[in-house]
Length: 196
Length: 196
Image 1 (tube, each protein chain N blue to C red):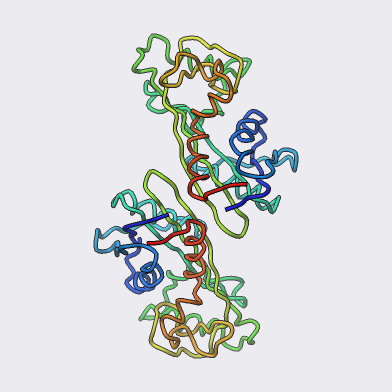
Image 2: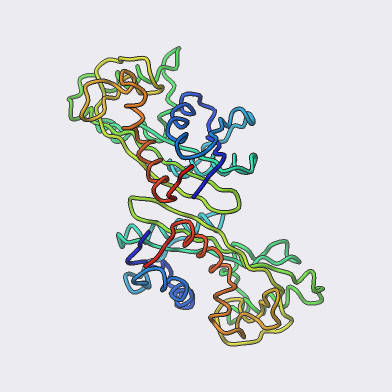
């Protein structure tokens, strides 16, 4: 299957860059939704998939183009899977510092309790045609202190299994090859047999 | 892509028969969910797609197998798209007679007001892998009196465009080739390039 123009339905530039890297070999043009309109979609879903579908549908309606949205979260063993769906919405301290909140929450926790996974649900909406939803995961451990400047969100404290560096220390192409979003995106590519 | 076993996530034998006909050329084994378990899924969605996804997910969880669910409705011009999502839940008279309710609602309505469409949303859930949702439509007119014994639901009063017989009068294979469910199912077959 061929998709010529694909809108990445996010206002987050870091997320757009990541998806651009993932998608550029499979679609002719990758478009940042934020450059089409300043749309804010209420993420009222009860699951990652519901939120991803809400965003993909809303942008597909506005743009008339194929739209890819994701919702993702970090799920930590010691926190019974929190912050999960609310990963992006943790407000902590004067700087709204999610990473500090997480490290304080895990103070004195053992390595097994620091085990975590990033989960992503991707929704691809082809207007008036279909919606495809895939989930992907990346397993790892929460570091004791932040390290690295790449990526965004919880990347400075997430060490993927098999590595001894955080997502924020790893080269972007290595992180992309391991990430929950890549894992889900590859499923979409395979299911649709996507190529340029 | 190949799907060996496909569960049709419905307790409605008429719907199962229809999906069996649609699917049997593309999957090795078509299974009636009702023969696996007596599961009732609350259809609390606000759209056909949401209800279809609820059913497909619930059955996929129970069976561990690929599950196909649909939600569908009849949308009538003169009734501003009603009964729509509530098509199966109209309670009318001592016999719960949906068709009589519809004919009474349309008494004295013109042919253009009797224009209607069947809409279906199909959700295919492949456990721990993906969910694909497609919509399909079939356009027609509501007859002045019921006719025919095939099919189920509103079939005796729905005359598809281009024909002068109701769905319940047409041979099942002709109805199947025209139906909203077929339309949506063909999209799934094409997207996944399904074959036995």
